[in-house]
Length: 118
Length: 115
Image (cartoon, rainbow over all chains, first blue to last red; front, side, top):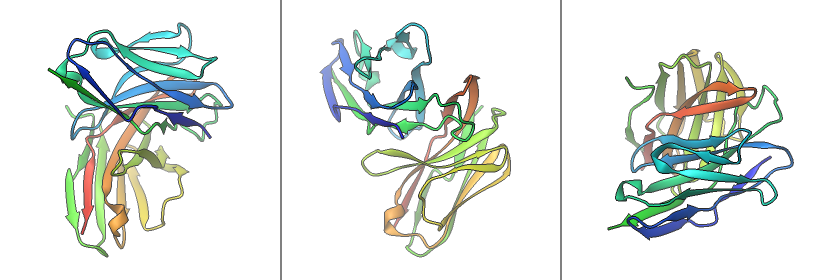
């Protein structure tokens, strides 16, 4: 099974500051990687995903993430945050074993609450 | 044009009752899921269905029974509700984007409170 560690449960930052949300995963096989965002009282929305190819992935709302296989990390970054970025962010992995029975099963980290202050 | 919808949004009930949560997706996806998000916001998969067939069944008490009348619907029925069942339940559906990669789309969640 896979596991995902989000090292920071809460990250407070000021508006227009850069931010990095950390994610490390543990897997004996290759994985696909995802970041989801959950705004208050809403469902999860996909921010970005890494499937293959370039290790730097760009997503919606100005976010990007870099896949580092040697460090088994997939950190999320934004160069300048807005108050509207305040939300819970979840890192998730899905394995590449190609078993039909997994059907894209996602393993989630415990989330990082990003709070942007004016 | 809601993609994945759930009803109800909020559900407050007494211990021991039986309740259902409904989920519908209009995306034409073959695969649907139920996730549970606990009070610490940890998300864990409960069930997955593909074309009305149960694929993933995590170690969930058998008081929880998913039902898929067709591939656009996946309902969750819970018998004999317990305090520990209080959580937010998310429905999701997915499409295959490449190989064995599935992109999941989540519903808005149902907040269940058991008193």
